[in-house]
Length: 443
Ligand code: PMP
Picture (spheres, protein in one colour):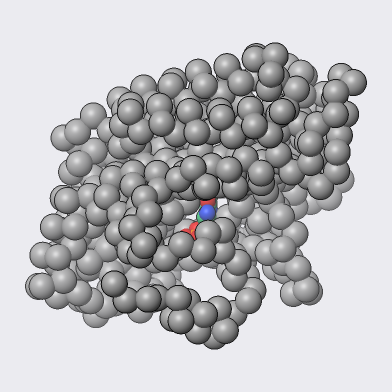
């Protein structure tokens, strides 16, 4: 076997140190929920490339579609001509949309690019300058998208002024509102409504707001599902002020939360929906969808991109849609979600670990376990000392036991975002490793 260590050292020297990486492993193969490094070590992957390989690594139907398309033609630039999978993809996606008004698409490569297009679309369509975003939100790293991102200060650190006209309002969540964790949901929604009403009285007139952007489950900011009543209120609020509602389903889409799209739970219609990640199971592809009428507000020729809607990525996405049609993926999400919640709620109520755990939350296979420790410092809860950095230590223990697992930006939180095809046995194994790691840290 070739020793890849020198190559890795070269990479460390010649790739920007601004990029950090969780694991030192060189991953050479993936199958379903498992990945292998070059030394043959096996890991159960509970990250799915941050919610991308929803059908598992190297899904045979997706791989076959990709190989077939690559053999035919890999790139047909979307402003030059059509590729066959580009045509097929529209047909595959139309029946999956959460509302029939979402019938006109544009395909990009990444979530951030789709957000950039949505920003231009809502401003052009409304002739209004401002947008509202939720505290804790993550919408991407490009210039406009990072101006909408409020989960962590690093995305705009040192860059000076970001895009102007962005207003932030609290999400109905205790961290966002700075209240007691036991505050009932209706109370949180009431407080968040009050703050939003105040925002348009004090900071920007509703008539100056083009759009309100929201992730239906706050992702990087802590895996917090939006209460249905909050989304329903936002729909009414937007209608009242002529504001467009943009729902960012980049991470929540394609079965992740136990329905094809998270907005199906609340029944709230988006004016613009953004999707990516699970769409093409690992190939770069994203989409913006809106009504024909809204999309037509951008003049012909104002939209395009060299790789936008790449033929190979579109072929992968067509295969993904077919798998969802023919296999019980969503059923598996709900069954495995229940299994995961049972383990986490068990830890939350067990006398050995209860003190460590502040909150267990999420939807489907987008689940978070928040620890009571506040980062680097020792904290005391109910007279008991909580060790520092519990999440990081649990994460390291899990990795040593062969489990890839992620944290979020919200305080001390581990997030679970496995491939949706994770089996009962794999989930049981992951739960056992995680529970053991938490118990060891608690000792
Ligand atoms: N929106 C959400 C909700 C996301 O989770 C992400 C990526 N984590 C993005 C936008 C940005 O997508 P990308 O990284 O593909 O640009």
